[in-house]
Image 1 (cartoon, rainbow, N blue to C red):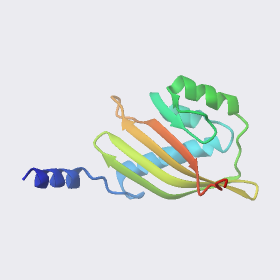
Image 2: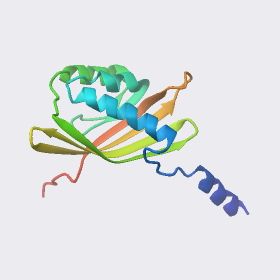
Image 3: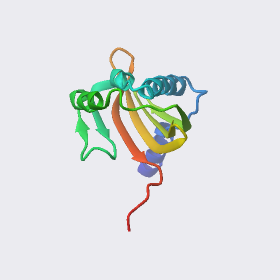
Image 4: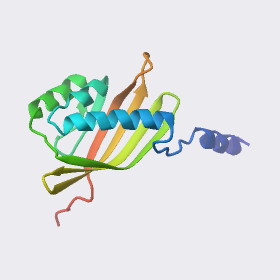
Length: 149
């Protein structure tokens, strides 16, 4: 009986990948795209404005996880104006949402001229007390990186 109840609970709570037809998915994907537009012009403020004070951040360029908006701001300020992309493609966006949490995953291809840069992104959003979605966890990785032998 406990197993059945557990399985039913998981089925009810299991998030379904929603594309842009879902209200939460539309909102979060739209916010992410707006931040990416700014990022591609050298302005990281779009992502900083979306991030909550307790955000944690991973990317392959940092030696360890960054904890807090102050540390993320310091990182982004150091590269402000240095990142530019002529265009980007957000592939396979997927939003999985339950209650006040949502996870956005997607594949990003950004172009500096004709050179593509391929990334995987995971953003965890939390609905705050003001009913605003805020990023609390960001994780960037290279798509199919070349591994040294």
